[in-house]
Image (cartoon, rainbow, N blue to C red):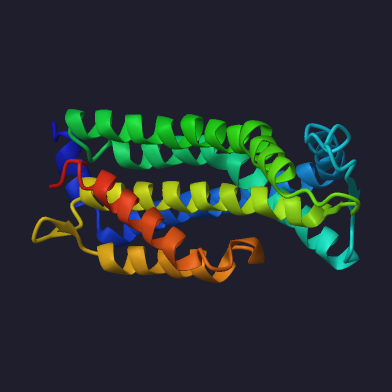
Length: 242
């Protein structure tokens, strides 16, 4: 009886690519379904999150305002997309593991399992921490250090949400870069000890951050992008390479 490895190696590369395409297609379909689900509750989630911020108790008696209605719509849909991507991570991780398991050695399966658990558990918790702990702390520091006596303060609600979205997007791009580079090494796409598509993946991730980070990150786009891709590259280099 032929071993699983022999059966797998006998399959043409087109068959493996078709299986991988099914993984991407199902993940994309899952994101679309999640977008429909989150679209009904995104507004209430935004209002509940804004109540966490110490606006009513701030020393400036600040109020929230919306200066551009279209900014509010854009922010709402950006939140929906972010929540959808986070929601679909466990499903995508299961599909990736099922696709990869048959062609990996035991030590590679262990490393892949740890990587996928990190991407589907730790990353969402980190994003949740940014929204529930990080942004309120940043808001409190800015409120206590930027007061001008006798001048009222109004806060732009879409800008506050956009700042949290930008931090969440940084975490998502970092995790996707880390997972992609690590999978390239595990699957044997390695030349001279480095992932074959390493520079392209790093360039895509870096460019994506520079072009898509909200304007609240102006002046820090390049530095942030470099920190993200360099840290993801260093950690992914510890993955076992064939």
